[in-house]
Image (cartoon, rainbow, N blue to C red; front, side, top):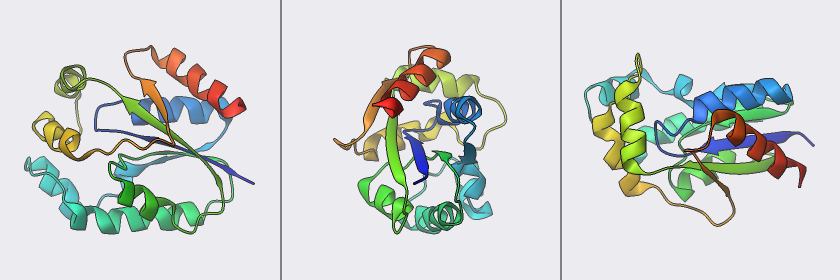
Length: 161
């Protein structure tokens, strides 16, 4: 059965960076959740307005459809902030799913966002994500203050267990 690694957390936690590295190391397909946002969602975030549940609904369905079409091992970088988002994201998937929450302190992530170039998500929106994120008990928590290489190694070790 194919494996699906889902890296989730607030914007700026390193989901894309870690996802690309681990997918390369493991020879898994990489899916960037941000690539599936509608133009309306992107414009809303560019205008410093947080997405609501309705905004995320179509986006999560698009990602779910994409995952259903994959028959290979995959890494997905997706915020998946609430439990209902995670359920929608994985509904009907026949895969072994491994959840990793990339977690860090607000100030640390906010500084990362302020230093990031060419992304539609503004650091002004970060608090809105911290306000709604739900941390499940079934995931593996990863401290994002570790180096990228250390984070990737920790994820690989968890996959072997």
